[in-house]
Image (cartoon, rainbow, N blue to C red):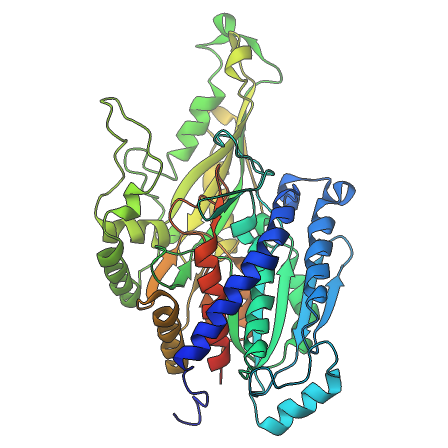
Length: 511
């Protein structure tokens, strides 16, 4: 132990006590709260333009805030912030707590706030801040939920809580507060903890920068960021997210007519808007391989991330692609993945740019598809970017590429959504690496795993830029087949319990 690592590892009985507290918290308090949360269709503003009128986002924010305040954590202060024209954000602030024998400290319901600050200062405890992050907005319903399940119909089955948003990311605020409570109940010292629980993440976090700017003077010396909005490679160990991809998205529209006309009358004369759109996309993507053609959408993969992908692939093996819900192909066997090399699978989904078409307009449903040459075709494009590619610059490059020199002089437009830059984790401080490994061993009996994620959490690049000295613990409950954003999304309760205890253990180690 040295001056930079002042907190000794937790004893086995302390780690076990944290686990027992987390188990009870989930069974008695968190699962009931999440069950109510799942019932509310609190879709992100991108998917519910009338979110203010519907009130669903306000409802889940109110419910979460009320739950936090009901726990009466010693010294906790909570505010629901509402900037004009923006979604609300929960900000909570819990003063540092010195170590004391479990069960012998002042009762959390009666201890005065100023006494806590005095005790903490007198104890020589950490002056740094731990920031917890989560979000309460949700993705839309999507189709394909199996019988008995639905996005707004919570169902507990085989240790999994099904429904939209429980795992992505409704559990975060409840787990964060429970981790703090677990430490305080055992008398284990911890730093000051604050929480940022937003309501626009699924729309690209457009409201978050304004709140960060507002709160920056109040965050203090941020030593650790705990982001609970990520995933796990398996259920058998703690997984640390090492990178996140960025995003450039928007609507590509091709228009050739002012109204639809009989296809027998005009096809062969009027160029198909779909064919033009396909031609334009050929500038961006090799349709045979899926490779993104412009080199400025790519970046060099750091050697450490390649080595970590190899280590993760050795653990996960071919499950990295076999766990996906493949359809049967032409011969009855599953559709083939782009590669069966587990290392390449992991790198493809975390460090390579990839184009997806996530929606379409101007194309009638099959039941109403007459012999009409359609006036326009529009695709919603989702371009995942490597962690080191600037999202704003890539979005402008994408717009120029798609709109330049339109075939047949058609009306081709690309309207971008908010872009996001990815994130590559800073080097782990020795204390954090030791604490993460110790937590994984204590609660899973296995070493820490390192894995990149293909999704985007805009907060991470914002916080790293604003607090370059802070360490990052990015993790989550989205493991195999949990299917966030899609049908049958679930939260693995056993993993959530262990993760809560692990987070508590790591926070206790923060110098």
